[in-house]
Amino acid sequence: MHPPAPSIAARPGVRDTRVMDSATAARASLAPPVLPDALRLGAVHLAVTDLDRAIAFYVRSIGLRLHGRGDAMAALGAGADDLLVLHEEPGARPPGRHAGLYHVAILHPSRRALAHAAMRLAATATPIGGASDHGISEAIYLDDPDGNGVELAADRPRDAWPDLADPGWAAGPRPLDLHGLLRLAAGEETPAHVDPATTIGHVHLHVGDVERALAHYRDVIGFTPMTHLGSAAFVAAGGYHHHLGLNVWRGHGVPPVPSGVVGLRRWTVVLPTAADVAAVRARLTVAGLSAHDVPGAPGGVGVDDPWGMRLAVVPATEGAAPVREGGDSGPAAV
Image (cartoon, rainbow, N blue to C red; front, side):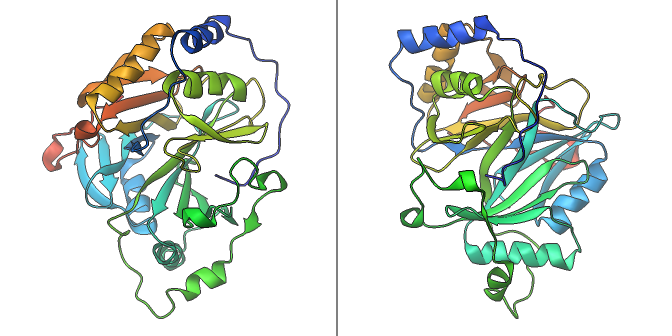
């Protein structure tokens, strides 16, 4: 989630009837697809212009551990699976008015862990862009040095969530009680690193059309819609509030991601078994979508959405190919 941005008029988008018709064919040929409840998110790959600067930010300000560094790339996480993989592209341009990453959410396992994250930001004098209470979660928003959006979040217990069909987000989120959050850890030493149970909570994307995005991520990939605000939709598996956010806050009809900009290179969904991945691959075939190999995950399948943003779907045993010290990297460049 993220505080809703104002809608901006854009030049009309071109309706891609091939994509829409293929999604319709997938719906007609198969039972409604549903991803497994045990789905989790794997590594998010980001392009940055200065690898040393980006590593310093994610280690010092965010508290991730450097898992390893390869040739113009580095992997970071909480000590086990890679959460972020950074790809250095020195000539990459800042993002503009097109589809792309809104933010990646780093999910802390408790409110106290989020308090430690806030303390870490204060200790490193890292500026933030906002802080919100969404009812389902509490969140702090900021950008990395290249403008890649980052959310630091902690979920509330599920039994405390509002009705996800109408969670009250249309009126905007409530401000986060930062003072109350920090009181949880008052007098404690600021941990250098995030809790080992920290994960990727969700990915939120700018797209050109919410319904067209749902035709891809719901009808073909198999995510279940949880909340629809008109200008944004939130989809998930297993009854979670959202693993993926989709919005048109950069304007309806914005074009695909151009080459040569910083931002998302791919994000990863980890499914329990190879059979689960094969089911997604079969839906891609029915929908007439091209499937791609996933570097570092031979059993995985990659697919681009209508705006060129790549999703890698991999089985659990291949969800975290680590970048090893000494230049030998598991996840190859996208």
